Amino acid sequence: MTSRQAKLQEDTNFRLMRLLQDNPDLSQRELAKALGISFGGLNYCLNALKDKGWVKMHNFSKSNNKLGYAYLLTPIGIAEKAALTSTFLKRKMDEYKALKAEIAKLRSDIDKADGDGSDKT
Image (tube, rainbow, N blue to C red):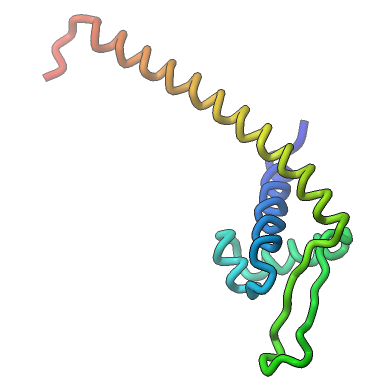
């Protein structure tokens, strides 16, 4: 079984790769804000994805903004994102089913409590 921390990291990687695919020109600060993580955390994630060969950084050296970078998914990164999408979806569907069951149980508990004849006023 995968640890909770590993699942969170996988989810963050998936969300980051999805953001990068849709918005390759977002700054690291914009990416961190969109993901709800710290700038340092985002930098750590980006470097991990670069080290795996899933993301490459392109510097627009001719740009007036010397900090202008684009983060692009590599072909391997695109394939990994597809695999992560499948894993992410399965996990979220499992969470959804568990949450539905918990809600049904809570509703049943409330219905039983309401039907016990006690005065709730």
